[in-house]
View 1 (spheres, rainbow, N blue to C red):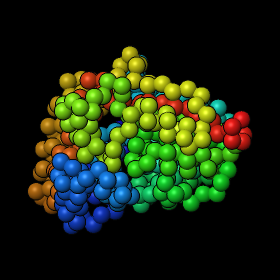
View 2 (tube, rainbow, N blue to C red; view 1 turned 45 degrees about the horizontal axis):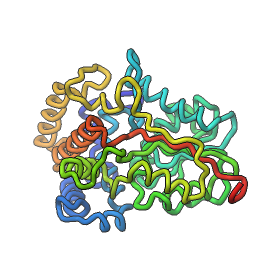
View 3 (tube, rainbow, N blue to C red; view 1 turned 135 degrees about the vertical axis):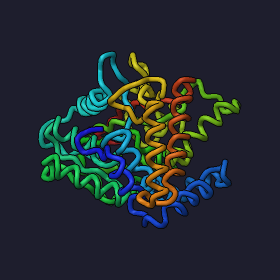
Amino acid sequence: MGMMSKSGALDLASSLGGSIAKGQVKSATEQYHMKYHHIYGGEEESRKSNYTDLVNKYYDLATSFYEYGWGDSFHFAGRWHEETFHESIKRHQHFIALQLGLKKGMKVLDVGCGIGGPLTEIARFSSTLVTELNNNDYQMSRGKEIIFSAGLSEHCDFVKGNFMDMPIADNTFDAAYALQATCHAPDARGAYSEVYRVLKPGKYFALDEWCMTDRFDPNNGKHLAIKADIELGNGLPDIRTTHQCVQAMKDAGFEIIFAKDLAKDPCPWYLPMDPSHFSWTSFQCTRPGRFITRAIIKTLEFLHVAPAGSMRVYHFLQTASEGLLKGGREGIFTATFFVLGRKPTYRGD
């Protein structure tokens, strides 16, 4: 999937666990399950207070599977008829660049968007200087490899840090974007406030967020089960609603230019995860692709090529996929809620 994706099963097996020692993958997986999610005993408040550990552990376990099945851009996108999966992902990234009005030489902040797929595409498309903030060592090492291979080392870089407390000076960037990354924040206003702080006055922040929609009923047991599956399978402390997302942007100080659920494209964002939809470009997500992947991982784990616990990681990611698919079909969850905010020239302008 994509130029730099680790599409081979042996590549997947060799990189599973990220920066976690191979012998510790199984125990890390069990700890992830038991400590942080209420269906296994972990409370939401515990997930929020321990979110840095939660997110790091999740991405150490999940990044190689993401790259194997999704390519180097870990986000969803709506899709037009006759458009391939990869074309839709790139179009979404170009949409972000255009909404921000990016121009050559601008300094842009990428807020935690994985291993560098969006970073390199947006830098190449807009001739900007893009810095990604990321707190996961394994993702940063993969991202630096991808940047180097793309020949963009002079245009892109990584800064290690937490988006709740960025190691970046005030008023540094000409633009910022977060592509389905700040859903990991324990406090939306806190994350958006940090973006506000490092943006120059008058500049824009493009937010693409995972949210529960107006159709979500917190008193509906089926809806709550779907929400819990998405949280468990994606390392999330909680999923906010679209209204909470917009309000948090306002509370952080942003002027809202517009907010829209982009899930209305002709082909829904969750189409690549639908096992009944056959596609060679997302074969790993189809029924035969899942069957083959499961058999390969099981065999490689048995042969000790893949670390113990690999199948369990695969299963909780399948839980995530099923939850996302159900949430999308029910219309109670969207992975593509877009908000464009502007930092005023001064407070109240």
